Length: 137
Image (tube, rainbow, N blue to C red; front, side, top):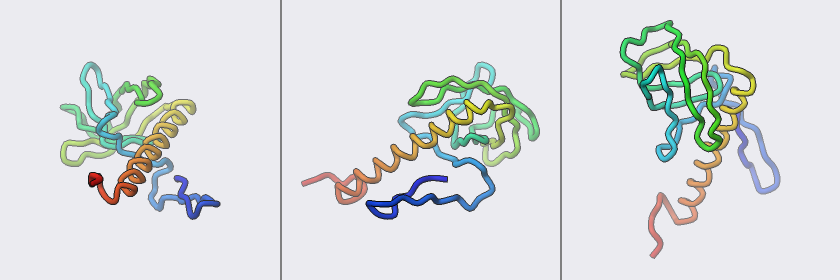
């Protein structure tokens, strides 16, 4: 779910038409989200309050439960939780968080909202410049 401005005076709520209960975002390249499994670091492809996708640790298996740690960019909130592997695709695993506290779920929701705001500002700036980053002359 996310906010979308219909006009200058009113806002509308759009609900995604997929099965996920939480909005999923891709961490920006200039502020990557990194999961730690043991001592190894893995870059996250996308994340929501319900789960994530990231580069598969060697030996990870379908159904396995991993303990992961990460620090959210922007807020610096540190989270440790369990992650159940539910899928593999081209060297990336996807799965669900297990036992995530309500406050950590909210922290991830806030992170997703911040990523959306930053992306919207980038799109707005590009539009003002007359296109995708075209320099002014």
